[in-house]
Amino acid sequence: MAATVEKKQLRIATRNCGFIDPESIDDYIGVRGYEALAQALTMTPAELVEVIKASGLRGRGGAGFPTGVKWGIALANKADQKYMVCNADEGDPGAFMDRAVLEGDPHSVVEAMAVGGYAVGATQGAVYIRAEYPLAIKRLKKAIDDAKAYGLLGTNIFGSGFDFDIELKYGAGAFVCGEETALIKSMEGKRGEPVTKPPFPAQEGYWRKPTIVNNVETFANIPAIILKGADWFSSIGTATSKGTKVFALAGKITNVGLIEVPMGITLREVIFDIGGGCPDGKEFKAVQTGGPSGGALSHKDLDVAIDYESLAACKSIMGSGGMVVMDEDSCMVSVAKFFLDFTMDETCGKCTPCRIGSKRLYELLDKITKGKGTPADLDRLKNLSEIIKDTALCGLGQTMPNPILSTMDTFRGEYEAHVKDKKCPAHVCRAMLTYTIDPAKCTGCTLCSKVCPVECISGTKKQPHTIDASKCIKCGACYDKCKFDAIIKQ
Image 1 (cartoon, rainbow, N blue to C red):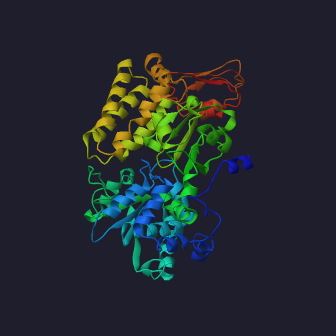
Image 2 (cartoon, one colour):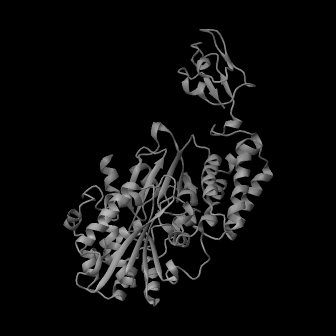
């Protein structure tokens, strides 16, 4: 199994993670560290931008915008100051790709930012990193200090006349600040809210100067592309999605953790060959790609290639790389409610569709999961979701309804069971559960009555017990403790 897991993977962005001491600049130099920067400085900025364009590298932060095109826009804009910004504000639940790179190979990001700075004419870089990443911050700080001490950051790098320095900016964990314009506002000390585009940050960003914003994983690919060539990188992946992608496998999956796979690999290979399928013999039900902004994919999508266009065709997204797997015991209505609860809490409140619309969507889902929904509520849920997608200001609001729309399309029967039959097929939504005791299996061990917090279970020792449904709070304590499978949850 281990051989299969490794065989399916290809490490580029995470190539050094676990193989070098992340706090040793000498270790990094020992694996050809900073050679890419030295090589880049022998080229013209325009030539360097063309290399990145030819590689086909697309931003790994979510939207997948071509990195070389973005750099070319900033290069073409003349200004007395330009900025190179690394977005390390990783906010998706269950996502830890960028954190792993910063903790395992911080110099790759430092070097790539310097390369990017030279390519677009920026002399100042900044890493916007969430304050909840103390180890990543510690190692990044040391990497920057050591690079300065070695003359690899600062003034006249490699005697080329190129100056570049990096500072850290700390985020408070706001999910919306993963959007580049909101991130820039936060860096400026303002409220982290998105602004309308154009102008795009590459034209007018940080302090109204041309600014490139790429995420950690995007930068981590840059040194390898410079050293091995654009043709090498573009030979990996699919026609429109080049290279590899790092994913964080989480949820009901046997092998939890980070993987890096070539673009074009199928969901089936990732979930079953690498992830080992669902544990405890449970059946796979769905996978949420793209975090709270993505969509739920089911059995019918298992052979879909993982690339930007294929996932979009399935009404999901690549996102930053979160991949949450769900098994047969997962309620898809509750899953949509969980993700919406997160995005509702993280909305910046600037635009009405997101601020108010998220609340109304959550109220509808809450009503449905409590057994109070109606068929008309399903129509309201879908219509409101589509309106918010079309009218919200930024990507957070525009993609917020994705978990609802995708689960309604793929698991429509579950929604209808909630509103028509007042039943949760997965037996997850507490308000619609009933607990009874099978007298044929109950041995009268009394364990269930002992753990019941409201004393609604009665019976004598060694005789079948009963549950008073009028008192039961549906906590499930009896179900979890019964050793004889006598408690029936339905």
